[in-house]
Image 1 (cartoon, one colour):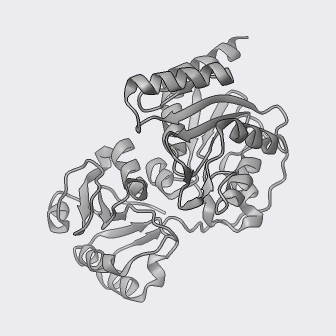
Image 2: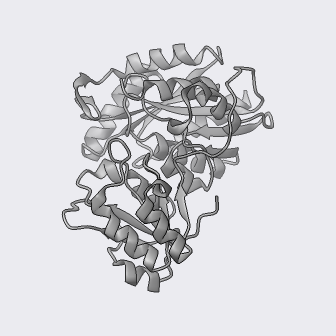
Image 3: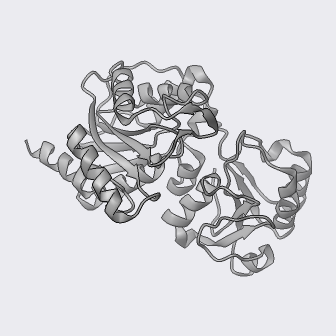
Length: 337
């Protein structure tokens, strides 16, 4: 799959900032590949990029329209079709991370074929996977896990990779979701892998490597989320992590999309993930806790992180506010021992 930047990020009629995490990921981590965002009437959120029309974007060199949304069920809404058709008529390729496939929608497929445009359904792996083995692999691995879904696992993974690279580590980010794949240019959309093969697909994503090489594996879902725990467990087993970073968002009262399900505690999340991870790596350890503190001011955020750090004895940080340097220093110190 070869994607063609620059990108125009389509955020449709979104009203929930979390629902445009794919577009925001590109805007935050690969802004040099984006010409702007395109939204429909009723949209109340933004990536922070300039809002431009499709025709203007093409004049500025845009080659691909990215459907930068992640709605419940991964549905390509009928209200989006006029914009998709306009982009295809302008000669743009289309990238989608939805469960619905662009190529399964006859009107889109016919228009793409007519205009010689490519349709990229990056959430649908084309590789064939085998079942996991749990056999020990060389190299070192860090997996981000969460108290809930959409708590910053991808952002934490990318920030950690950046900080480790700066510190001289041999490190790679391994994408497991559609946003991460766009950012990294490769990966496996793990939530679209047949359940029997999730662990095996994750093993192939992070294979044997040099002893001092690190893979930062992007986590998905949460072991405590009734809808996504299956994906999270297969990813946890296949990652065979040496370390876990637990991600948490402040001020959530229920699991995302499930108001009847309360949030687990950080302590319970740590215990649950460590116990499950021991199936494939009995030496797994907690490396740190990444907290999304955007719901509070910086002073309160520091107080919360300091309290959690005293409680759990590992670095507690907001990767966007604080960076990941203290976590990386922990790895430096351990490698020097």
